[in-house]
Image 1 (spheres, rainbow, N blue to C red):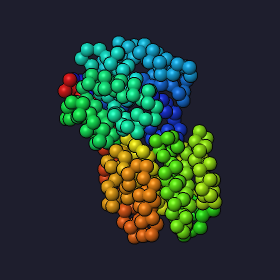
Image 2 (cartoon, rainbow, N blue to C red):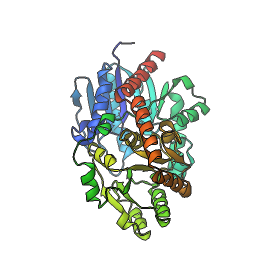
Image 3 (cartoon, one colour):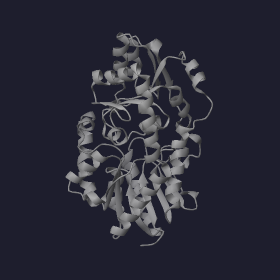
Image 4 (cartoon, rainbow, N blue to C red):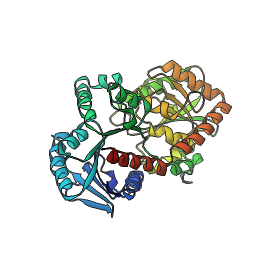
Length: 394
């Protein structure tokens, strides 16, 4: 094996090409990967940039954005990426292909993989045989589930982001020693030391919140599996019991109009602020301005927002997803409840509202443990180490 192997990564995220504050973390993460190998080639689906020629992001990182049509979507990506991938492999001594998911990027990797080139398949969520995911789009997701069971055994190693997903892979008779549990790295410094503006007081004033009002925060994409209605109903349940707080929702609710309708139906308009989508680089002050973070997903592969909230020093109420269970421990670093259970979620929230001491204890413990376990440079080194291990073991 070359001491500085060249790697081909196949994925859907072309934000590494966007040199702005909103994509700084994505770009920095891949630059760290590239600096630790001979060269990192990234074949990506062009959704934010125009496809065409390769782009040299650094002397050791080259990105190849591949176009797609709105009508054909991933099928067009597969065809064009197949052509580009074969070209990359002909022109460069690639030692490893790493695919972003066990579906179409893995299929593409298998189709273009030459003999003696190692293959790693990644999974950044909690997909495999997940009943919640399978029922969202029964026909399509069952097809993807079957596709994953075909692609996964054809890899040499695997990367997952939580322990429960690894256990599923082991049940498929994949060797446990080749399954690496490696969460996505997070720029912890951004949340431990947020910018001074906008500060806590100014944000709370914009939301019409008094200094002693407890602010509850949710951040993300309000897609179905995030189950935002669960936390809204839990807040409503407690407010009917006489508790007072303010709910702040950060995200683009343009395609999730049922959430504002639910807030209005429950009479929570005066106690809820919809902030719209906020660039990731500008999120830290929102965590600082809150008191409790709410995470209500039905399932989650990792839960990056949980790491960000913990690093920001927030107390957390969350559902027991695979991702959450790898990050948090009930009654030690957060309060956790089963997915879909509004009453249990509300009861955990009530416990934190009633006990400032418990909020402080959980928040301090979570912050200390998160900052030790999720250092971005350490996480990046572990990803590269898994690549090198794959190449050596092939």
